[in-house]
View 1: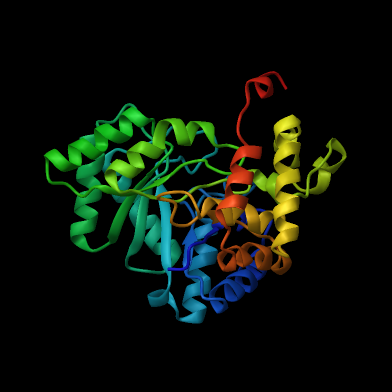
View 2: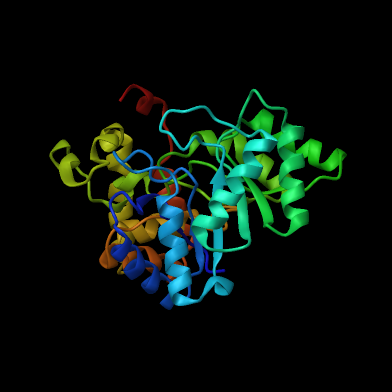
Length: 312
């Protein structure tokens, strides 16, 4: 597996099915094979139910006859209706896995992830359901996303104590700017339990691409307004360091940001999305980069949260 995951959240949102096919063709042609999606994508788009992203990916694999070459990760637990309740009850998981398998036009899912924790459901019930799916061959591995550290550790303990299939991966928000929560609360758990870390928002919703450098830039994409929180002293300091390192490597801020993530312990495949081939080429360029320690340290230092940053 090449160490990048294509984020399928854009499919059915900012990328139509034709664009999906073009992007995934280029992704695969460059030696990549890991695609991440969810049963609920892209339900935030008016008129789109859950399952659109999975269906695009399934149609693409069916057309290209390449299912055996791909690693497909999807998620369960987020309501198909925007704003609905989280659900990791066994009955729901067993229902939704069939929904995802049908959308993806496959008889197995490589990595089936709990999208959000369901605090009303005993983790043992959830893990029993996942265990049955692995035993049946419908799922190969399971992973967790958006769990509290305490609930993640509890789930790992239950799996160990009761000989149930255990989470092998963790999908947290983690990037060069959004570091504090993962590094202070989750990194040690991932290390202790040998979890493969698959960060989402790897480019901070696009901020780390360098595309947004002022409030005037916020209208450049549908997610632009979510970038406003990065337009501060630390954000600009981070972009300046990215610009310097990108120039040195004849690369781009986006590529350098992903290359930095790939230097982090336990990070196996940052999730990144593209809406056109030019963007995708930048992202794929990250794997050819081998940041030296000096440049890695420069980026780590520039993006660190300083006491004075908390007021900016």
